[in-house]
Structures are given as C-alpha cells and as structure tokens.
Length: 161
Image (cartoon, rainbow, N blue to C red):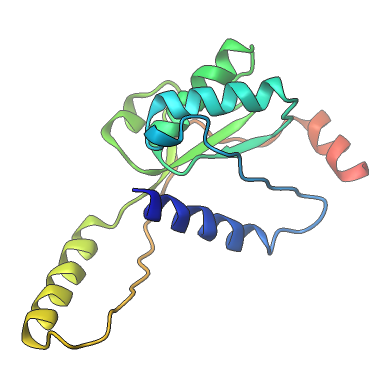
C-alpha cells in the first residue's frame, strides 16, 4: 500500500512540473498514515490543511475514498464542490458515480491490468531469472460533477499575484 501511494505521489509531482506559472501544486502529508486509502484520511488531511490556511481551487486525491473524505471536510467549512473547489480522485470506485456531486476520477484499466499481470506471471514462470518489468498503464478520465471552472474572482487573484 505505501509503495503504491509513494508511486502515485511521485506521478503527481512529475505531472505538475509542466504546469504553467502561476499555478501552484503541493502534496499534503497524510493525516492518518496508517490508513492511507480511507475516507477518514481524506477528511482529516483536508481538515488539517484548511486549518493551516489552504486556499486551493482544486484537489486531486490519490484515490477516490480519500477524495470523498476531502469533500466532506470542504462541505463542513461551507465550500461547495465544484463551485468553490474542484475535487478529483483515482480508481473509479462504485461510490464515485453515486456521490453528490458525482466524483470525477481516473479509472483503473482493469482488463489491461489483468492481461499484463497474467502475461508477466507466465513469462516469469517460463524464465524465472528474467529481469523485473515495469509497465505504466493509462486509465481514462471519467468526468462527473465534482470538477468545474474555478470561480472568476479566484482566477483573477491567481493570475495577477
């Protein structure tokens, strides 16, 4: 779990390197590290970040359950999703389509994961001494209601600071 989490954080950091200025991105440390992939972690991490003055127009959670917890914390502070803050996650869990608003997410390409995992397993059985193989699979973005344009006053403030 922690290794996958670290890979997702690294992927996020790589992705935001190409963002144009004045966009800013930061990785928030998990508030509940022993329960990384939980709504509780998303809720507590977002609550702590808001207490510390986080002023974001968008949140990208490393999994959908964390995103759902973050949405609860935002809502409790009177912030509306997506009108005030956009929120997106990863994994396309069943709950993502039933959440209000529906959670925008990146779906796991499960059929391709199964196919590649099976191929690697069979290749390893046939040649146990072969080198490890890393495969990067891209999943589709599933657009739902949790992402929108930032409020105009926020865009003006960011682009003029």
